[in-house]
Image (tube, rainbow, N blue to C red):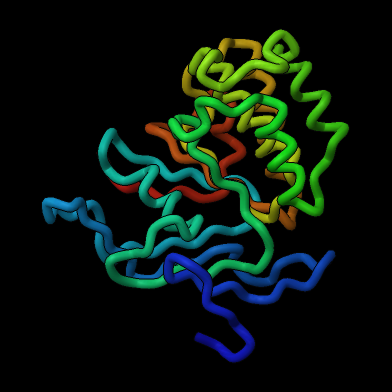
Length: 221
């Protein structure tokens, strides 16, 4: 750990970041990371991860550790070995499948996220909520939503939050075609923001992002 750094959950070291300055260092770096399932099966070991500003892809087959790696990046899990360093500032990560959200209202979820992020863009929230076709679901509980609509709630939050680091797990899953096109356009916009990094975990490069992915972390098939 370097001087001036502070430990945070999950073995992550948060480093100070100068507001408004273009990052000279990676937004996140993982060194010699290892993780295993409870039965001892090794998911990955000795993994080196570097996330620069722009779009990055964690590519892996089913059960190869995509979500696990995002949870490690977020500090939700501690690595079995190795360490993760990231720039200071809030990051966005939320698993849209989390059953603990079932009884929560759509607007309450978004209002809670707005309170977390100083750079939250309320205009973008409203525009995205409309563009994703979510107006009919205002006032509903998340358990009342389809899988795709439930995912859209958290995509609105991710795209409006303004966090320096945004982690998205299979963000295109269960989306209708217009929503997929909207998400591609929004990710292209975020990818051009040089002080922001977006990490997408998926089985392959999502269609429409082939020329926008700056870095790939391949966990294998």
